Image: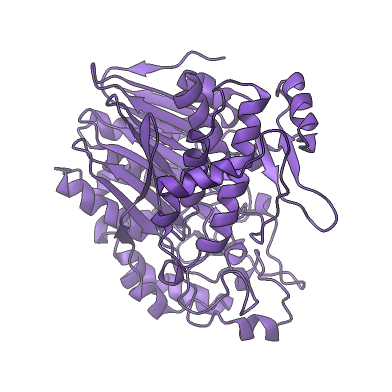
Length: 524
């Protein structure tokens, strides 16, 4: 295991070293954690183009030193023309994830940056926007090395719209990269302000390209959208209060799993009993998630009601200690994402996640701006009576789920994962650090499992990383889990996670970023 880096006052974490360097530069120049995170997100749009970009969505958690926590929801809604009838008439049985028809929602990420900077200014932030975007602009121009380590390979067509194939599919993700116009787009935003993305010159070009492409997103959809500040969800645990984003984020699942596990009489070790409890808690959490997490205006019940102690105790009591339960879900496989964390010298803490949906988003690069548009089809259903049915203005289910924790002893932790199953990786990492007592590096680097639901006649599968303890895998199999080793190239499925934790006594920040993605933690 690697040594955990510890810094005197502040630190940043990201799955790409140059993204972390951007954040460190802002902190060193006097910026706060929110400003550093915005700058990092902009650089990630250039350096990790297969996973994140200006054409994607984002979710933020921010905690002030005094204890108040905020959630920022930057998930865009379906376009005005995104109807079930439209897609059924085109012959779709399910929503596509590539091509023009997959570019069906507004991109909310940049509006989220604007809202985050409003919060930063309320905390005394004074960094000018052109400085926050300077690294991203420089990288997009190619004046600094922009080659990303695996698993973020830059490659492909420059300055073009990638048309759908005859089958309605876009080009393969490996044929994409940000266009040469991206630097100009970032420069325009730095000059005119981030609101220009939707309601200015940049917005006009985006709308025109989307219309030519045949996307159901209209200019009025861009102009009417704004990211929202919302109350975060939280759950009280024995050692800490854990925070997550409310729907349409699936952060509720992370909180439910942590709350259920916290109420189970199981030793916090790397043994089979503990991992079995984790797995079964996640199954219970996902069952609630599947009923609750949808468009936030249509959530059938208040999500926080499922986090009450008596409800968590009932869920914990329903878990069988010696037998694996079945596991199914109507939620289709989700895409990948990039987690960014930052805690500054004052203790302002940020945990945020951005994503384009599936690898390479919709595959549609808008030529006038160089923006790769995201795809959110896997967050909707074409069944009017089904799970999260598509409708204009409705928002998709989101895998994006940043986490943040405040411990009873004063420690503050930011935590995230960049894979398709963020709650699963988060709960393993959090349990290892907060419950078992592993260092940040040990908790992040420890081999992980990912629970895959039953499909057809095939039962659920517990996929494990190659380094997973064989004896532990055998013990889990004896409890009824169908254990399989994941193949090569599975990092994206498990995620590229990380965490930072600030200690109250000396103000030091310790952290780790997933070495599987070549990530980095840097600090002051």
